[in-house]
Figure 1: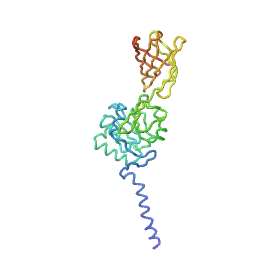
Figure 2: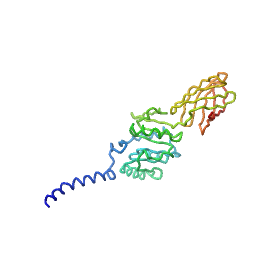
Figure 3: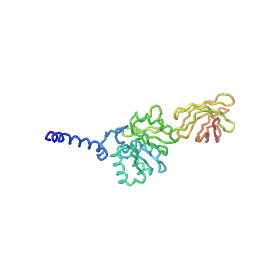
Figure 4: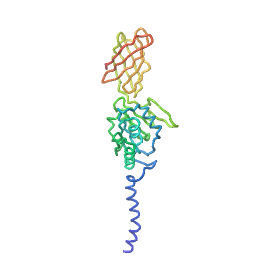
Length: 276
């Protein structure tokens, strides 16, 4: 009996420590460097948060989703300073608790809410802005999902890139780097461009927002240069039959494009295009 008592005296502190370790994350104060399933929590400075949200042109019409939201500072900033609805997706319970308390304290709990969830399982279908500060490996895994979002959705990231998906804009602040991507529409393939007197066929090859366009009019090649895609907006320059340079700007819809064209020595004209 004495031996059993001695054994329990040795085991009980160890068992208690084990139980505390398992229960700790829910009640412990968050620590910078806290490890989660797919990330390590390191907060984004407030100035960078503001610049990223400005870069994404966030307004009260937006829904900002922050993947790996940590202590909730990005959703709270989006709600408090931009009037946007915001969702923070975070796996760690203690960080969710701190986020919810902070949203209440700052009077934005009606706009900013937090989900305890694996970021890979988050529903992004309603997002207009996605915010990221997560590791390169996670960025790589997320890239196909981000590219599949509704064209025009803005993606911002502190520090980390999306590899071969070139950023649309890059900012620097306090020695840190921020990136913006605008999810591009799919414009690959053949199009028939209708514009008075200068209609043509074009073929578009696309790698994310980078376009290569080949043109043809009356069986002869037409140069198309300066092509660029930003979400659902397309721009390129081509040449009329008389050689005048014409700049095209258009909006992309379901199987159609339409917009304005102009140039220094050409008449401004409306144009539209449909898939050929």
